[in-house]
Image (cartoon, rainbow, N blue to C red; front, side, top):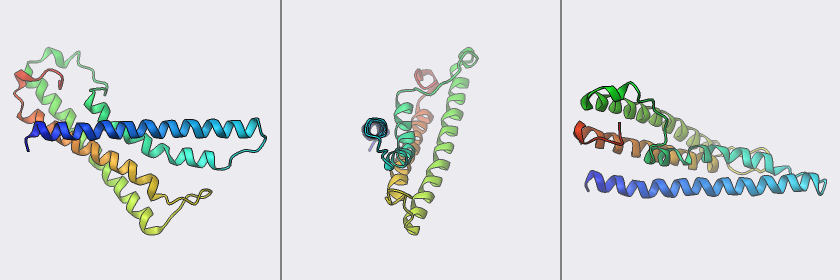
Length: 169
């Protein structure tokens, strides 16, 4: 399978993961609204809403990482690098993508360790008694996806001639 085909395949998964993050946000929004309604309109607070929405923050925080990379949505200051010739700009782009991959791998490993630790220990949330690994696993999956996608994008940067790079640098 060619690099371009692998990137295209992973971009479909990236879009799915971002959509999943959007669904989680909608669930949080509805659940928080329900919690506010029961607390103030019915004077019967929902004890689960705070913990549930807090536990959902981890997966939603990382669900859009790879999508942001796909859309080139990470901030960059290019005033100085635009003055350099294409080969130097490519070097900065390689450094930038390499750092993003390193950070993604670090957080992926930490999330995998947290997920497996929570699974092995059988830890559950305090009020809901839901297994904690169920909340760690989607975040870990999103971080792994980001790392693989960043590695593919780094590989594409490496093989693309500096004169052909436009959006990467």
